[in-house]
Length: 427
Ligand SMILES: Cc1cc2nc3c(=O)[nH]c(=O)nc-3n(C[C@H](O)[C@H](O)[C@H](O)COP(=O)(O)O)c2cc1C
Image 1 (cartoon, rainbow, N blue to C red):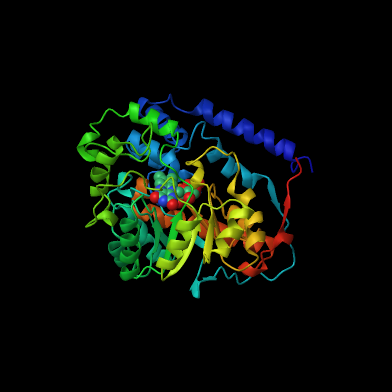
Image 2: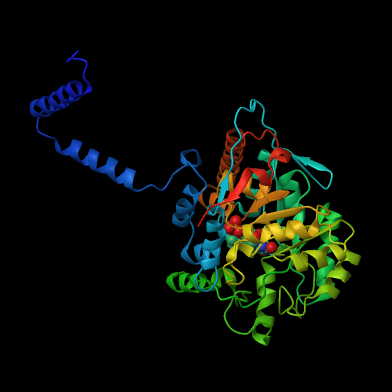
């Protein structure tokens, strides 16, 4: 009985290893260096291939290592203190999940139908501009990953590839995000080009005015000692400091547009703003009359604007604060979602993005009434670190995590995920 005691077993094990140690030969130098290298590898937790990632955050460090400082600054920046970036993420930490038991969860169905098209996942790729700054695959790598994994992709107006090439790489329709600029002929040209290419939806972004105070970006630009003018030429940047709409920014836009194929063949000499300061509901009406495919607005965060959007005949909304890179509101999108969902009352689909980093985040957003859930930085981390393969891995992790929590919460399909499955976390 004494021999079976864990205490005795434990101490004899200890005694054994001590004896082994005493018997051991003196440590040879190469063994010591090998051990040191091992230790270093363990503490340097940056992954070196997509399959090493345990979660999507693992791609952040890998991307940071791979992407030049100024480009990293562009990807990671928020505005002012970057507090809204953090708030988006933190918002999900204030919601708890109520799991139901004794449900047969052998089969999990994550499919979702949006505008009559059935997708096998509610996880969508939000539009991200200038993705060749992260990896030569750029938006084509994202499109190919979207194809492999079967996800909905939105292409930015300021993408580094055209809508035609993105659709070809996706092997299916891609939604076109729209920055209208201050020149109506350009707005119209982008819409008609996307429609002709086969884009089934135009997504007007309304939350980003030129001149956002992107301090993290500005600091990283200072730290980057490369010759930026080699790629950026004279350098209009919609994110430059100072007054937007000046003649200096007007001159520089042509150079910026030269690397953005959605501006090919249009006269950009009068463009001073990507998102016109004068943008209002009259322009929404004009756009509604112009767009012949589905028309969505991205950047709605209040009940009032959601109601107005529905009144103006908009087909869908994206609750978004541009990933906290437009204005420092400190309001997480997951906290804006309920009032928007309530306002539209099921009349149009509502997609949410901002700070979604876990399958449980997706679950919570769906429980709050989101039709689908998007993300911008994580797929760009995957892209920056490993190109198309990285984006695929990011998508796979989100899919796996969503299925896991659906099983754990006893929800076998997306329509079974309801408000009953979440509660606020007591503060
Ligand atoms: C580098 C970068 C570029 C972006 N470019 C665009 C864009 O061109 N058009 C747009 O509507 N949103 C753009 N967004 C916002 C994303 O579509 C999305 O709303 C946001 O990234 C979601 O937050 P998350 O990064 O925390 O997932 C961009 C975001 C990032 C990080």
